[in-house]
Image 1 (cartoon, rainbow, N blue to C red):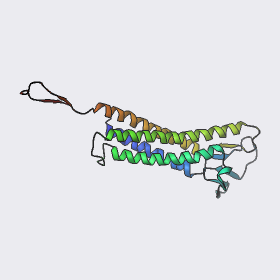
Image 2 (cartoon, rainbow, N blue to C red):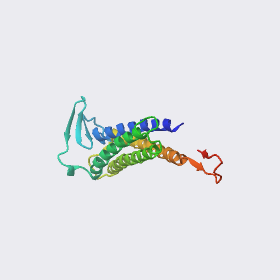
Image 3 (cartoon, one colour):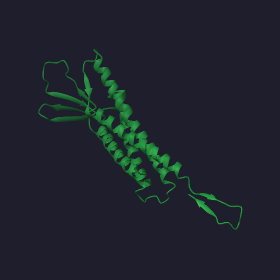
Image 4 (cartoon, rainbow, N blue to C red):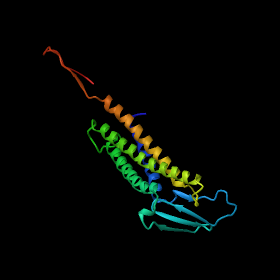
Length: 209
């Protein structure tokens, strides 16, 4: 697969990872109520996200309320707020930079600068993937630890956003890794034009690419 094909794949992976990061940031499904071991059927499910908490009735009615203060959040969700937003911003910026420096666009006419631009976009996608993967894994670890702690009265389970965040982080890391590998190979292989000069003035000059 040529460099243009790899860049198209990386753009697709980056956009999918960006969508996953936005979903994790917006939807309040990081934590959900757990009813393991209870014989009764409850009519209320509590859901917690980065910005609000929701109560879902068995009838499908949902009521959400934003957090009154940042201090009421646990430490993992406080860090997840900042890191998830930074991940979304880095992913958007990296995809735009990749579009500008890709071989299938003409935004940048300097062919020697394109591999360096794509390399910068790859590094940005790697950072975006880490910024998404770290808070999701941290929150998942906290939820599992509290679930296994008998002193915690309200048990919570992993929400859908945890799994979406893991998938989005993997997509961003994969896109950034592929882009960095192929960009380094392209910049190293296109070392420019090597010129051969002869000591004989009458001899014709030869250029080797």
